[in-house]
Length: 121
Image (cartoon, rainbow, N blue to C red; front, side, top):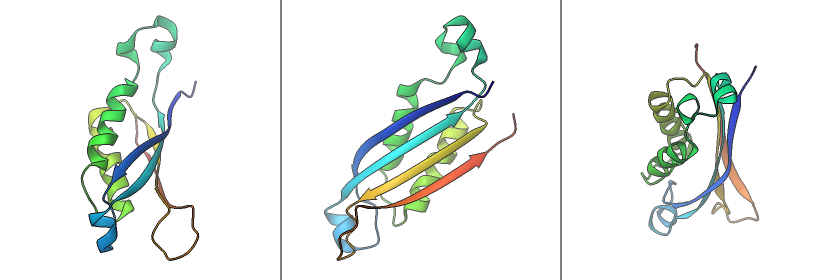
C-alpha cells in the first residue's frame, strides 16, 4: 500500500526574494506538500502514533517560511531537510513553494519551485 498525506495551499506572508521590495515589503506564498510514508498501522489501528501529525508538519513549514531567504530553492531545501529529520518514517516528499504575484513588472500569477526527494525505508 502506498500512503500519502497531502497538505494543500498552506498560506504564508514572508520575505523571500532578491529584490529590496521583496525583503522589505514581503509577499504571499503558498506551500503544497505530498508526504509518502508507511501508514498501514494507522489505517488498521486508528492511532495517531502510527501516522504523521499534520499540525506538526504545518509548524515545520511555518517555522522555515519565517526565515528569509533570497531563493525559493533554498527555502524549499530547508523545509525538505527539516521534514526528513523530524519525520524519519518519510520515504518521499513532493514540495511546491509558490510566490504569488512576483515583482516581474508583468502579469504573472506566481513563480514556483518544486522539489521531490525520495529516501530509503
